[in-house]
Image 1 (cartoon, one colour):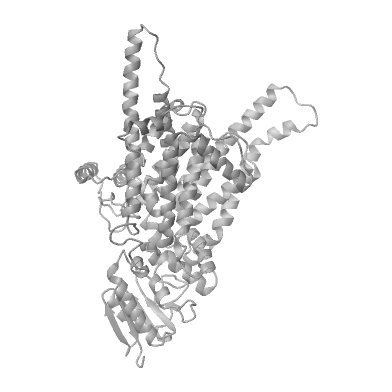
Image 2: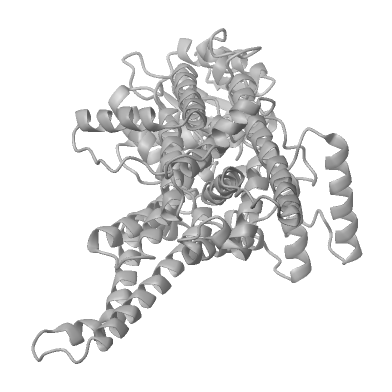
Length: 640
């Protein structure tokens, strides 16, 4: 881990030697790749090795946690994992009657990947690896984006370091959430779009852009907020390149008859438009089947009204947008300093009231949640990212105002990319309501913005190491140079301190993060598999077992489900499996799908319930015995 108090480490990170480039050799087989890796490590400077070692250590420990911990994300218990179990049980991807609309209305891209692991292994032991792999993809692609924007090896390592130590990334990399998967697809779209800034796009990249856009849409539609501006950037760049080619051809003089060059140039615009259409067609092929099912079921591609109104902003007047942006920023940059949090929230609330905006307006606030909500604690669903956020903001400001300071050879590309990132963040605040767990919805933007931080940090270290020595006797120049070196040295020490703090935050998130941690209560080494699944709600563990045992002992085969929209369904799929290991026969006794009625309670052998005893009692047939214990209950017919 980088230590801000060590001048040696500061010098190692900031030192300037040979040009900051990766080895030119490109390997083809495993042996060649290993040779390139060894050569890269051998030529790396001590500071670069420290950065790479920290990144590698975090990724490997995250892999260990992902393999050891049972899936215990709250949303996964409600709809991510039950969705997979329904597909396996019915043998297709069609919808089913359910009281939890998110099981069918939320895009299922990440769950498609989980489905393959479920079919291959017969269980959920490897489910956490999907997000872990997505995290690795995010690190690699963010480093590639940094290189595309002019960053050398050190800049790429700094980018990967800042991203790898961001607590939200650390925690989600061992989870069955879907935000890292979405961020990975968005990052893939970004790096392919950046390829189009300097060269005309071929068929492979067009197909890749379409696939990335479609995979983003079928995983988490909020990611399209960034994919849209990225595709606009790509299209404008392709038009600029076509025009440049036409101008260059005209400068060479008239083309000989029959060489086809002029007609090809005339078709430059058509090629760009055709490529854009192809991208949209490929994206539609990927996400189309899911949207078609949703439209057929609810009459709208975005699902039922309750979904369309719960997350998207319902007010778009400037005052409401500003207040929403301030609340999102307050939650994203939250720190453990409670007085700072309270002061910031009070300013936002007072300011909102002063301009006539209710800071708790349901049209701009999710559900019944209330602003502010602490977000500093390392919880996978809501942890803030103040360090990565501040570094990204600084990098973005410099990229917009003085791009040549951090990427002299790619200033135009850097500024354009910064505009896209800023546009995506602004669109997010215009389109998405504030919510306590909104930080994870911003993860795609964090992944896109961190390369700007890496480039700025690298430029800061480069300027410090590259100070020129003034001529002897030039007192004024000497004084100015010493003053400049002093300021840059202070800035460098501050940057190294921030990197050290970021590393500490990442290690602490991995060690003590919730609900999967290495040490303390709930450690993956000391907590049983079943109790790990219930770390979010430990009081429910015995209740589910109690009800499932009674139902199994009754000999029931067809079991009815009674539950509300945010209840846990997944434990029933584990506890009520058939003796041969096949999926249980679970059917919903309620349904929010208009074309799919629920099962008749009289057609089942037993009923299991979660949440409300009163709601359960309404569906239990007369004469059945209903037992309830806290959150969980069951009902059996006479004689069972």
